Image (cartoon, rainbow, N blue to C red; front, side, top):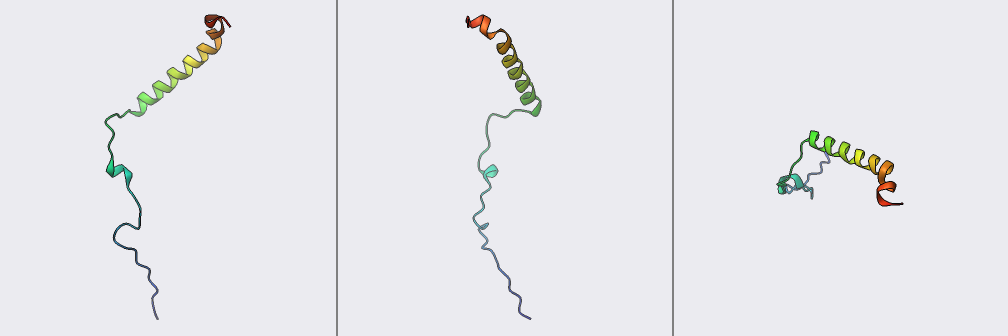
Length: 57
């Protein structure tokens, strides 16, 4: 019985691992992202309520 095996080259078959190549100096914790999203949502709600009066529309 012959075994038909396909072997990949040792270079990783063209796959790139970008997280190994670059590390950002800016990082946010999940809690900070949630707080920022809540603040932005509140700002949008307040502008929808009071925006026309403040902008004279």
